[in-house]
Amino acid sequence: MTDGAAIRHLPREGLVAGMRAVLPIAIAVVAFGASYGILARDAGMGTVAPIVMSLTTFAGSAQFAVASVMESGGAVAAAIAAAVMLNLRYLAVGTSVAPSLTGGKLRRLAVAQLAVDESWAVAQSEGRVDRDRLIGAGLVLMTAWCAGTVLGVVGGGALGDPADYGLDAMFPALFLALLVGQLDGRRARVAALAGGVIALALTPLLPPGLPIVAAAAGAVVALGVRA
Image (cartoon, rainbow, N blue to C red):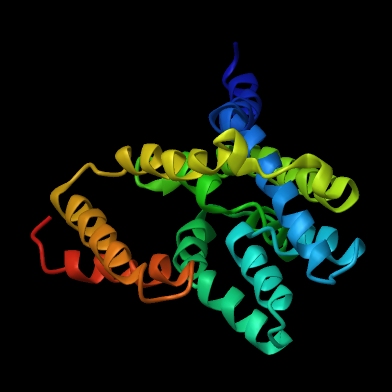
């Protein structure tokens, strides 16, 4: 294979690698997308809005927060505030992804839309983000999430509760598996441990989702540790 052919072949390999890395959780993503669709419909968001939100927001925790607040009678402003709080972590994710993005503004925006927790984690390569792996993983996750949303909105309660099948445990297990690959130094291990302790301590005190946001303070704690 010539050097030129090898260069043309590499992006495809990255896309496929990213797709394969997240494919095992696609079923769980579909199930939780369906749960969101059901919750959003029952919250009075209709059928179109939840699907559009999955396409444009593509952030499960934030979307669940919005639907939950609206279902409980909360104001739109409160729902937006909850979603923003839960997505603050993407400021750091976006900062790390930006150097790997190329092309015009619209192209970079489209790729950035695919940067979620799982796609970002599997795209890590030697201290940087592999754009092709990010795209491959993100496409699979977005397709699964949006398909699940449509199923939930259209199928409704006939789909049942994903928790009945034990699928609610798949995402915590997934994040633990992704975390292990990042614990390659003392500072990283301290950040993970401190973040876990903070989240556990705040879980009984704060609304769901917020303890995870607060756990980011574990990274601040780790700054005092020699790398």
